[in-house]
Image (cartoon, rainbow, N blue to C red; front, top):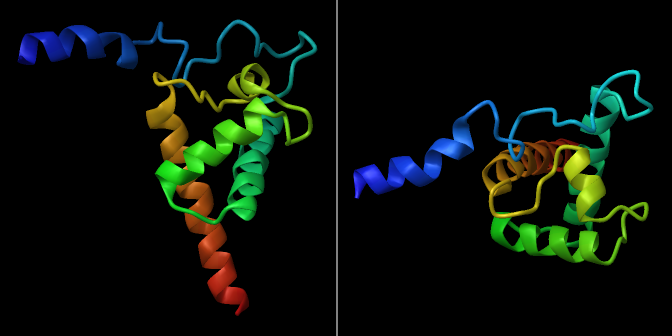
Length: 116
């Protein structure tokens, strides 16, 4: 079992994995693409938009994010554009997207508590 687990997870952590933290070929500076700061802003704004639509915990928030992306309800962005912005909604990208979403929603909840 351990050998099998190492076999299928080795591609998730390697530097060649385009699904997690690697910049990918479409995010280069000076190529007319978004800067890293702008990418982070789009990703955070997308998560905040989805969380404001449905203030739910992660598994349900993921469903909302997929619905919003599938229908291009946030600035006309779909799955591919969001992936380029750092949010990969595929099965391979879920761990990283989950971590980002949890950070964003935790901060949003903290701000809501401070404001009340």
